[in-house]
Image (cartoon, rainbow, N blue to C red):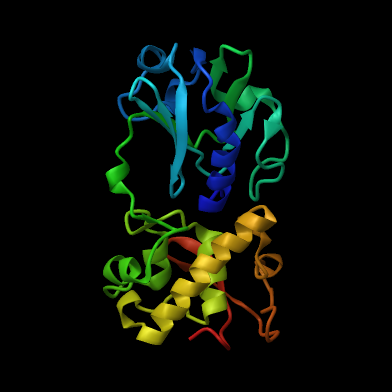
Length: 260
């Protein structure tokens, strides 16, 4: 967390900054600045410039500026976005529920007096000027079956690991992956290239429907499987005790009865 769903919620909130002019930049945590980005470069690139649009590719949120520069924002596991006094998300799974301004890692202050803040307790996110978007795969909200077939449904790697690979499909995190595979009836450890054509179509449909549903409900923690993601948890459909394994480097829950 946050996954592509949460970052889309952040992007929608960040839309309020479109048309505003940046007055100043606060970047007190040099660790949070990624690539070769420095606070001085950020200030030179965006101070006095207008936000022209917001975008998102997977878990990467972008602000485009009138200068032609792009600001990339990654939220890691615990990052939240606050515009003015409003946060896009009040509850973030697996993060502290405190709301401490001491965790503010980056801030844009606007000429009208408003601001946009990235608050991240664990400092796992980051800010980058003009990030390389080409390293990311097709976005989870718009990925086509053909794109999945060429990048995800290939090779002997576990299907869950392929879904989590941001270079192949951008925006899928652990909760989206488990919920999608559970609804599609596919074992997370299956070889990605061994799925049948019917299974590929079913997984694609479930992936698209899961992210749309999660966005409407308010986050990736809103899945039917979520409440059973614990030791001795049971499948919400058939009551079987869930398997708890590590697949693709992540703790994974799946049903041994209907996921094959």
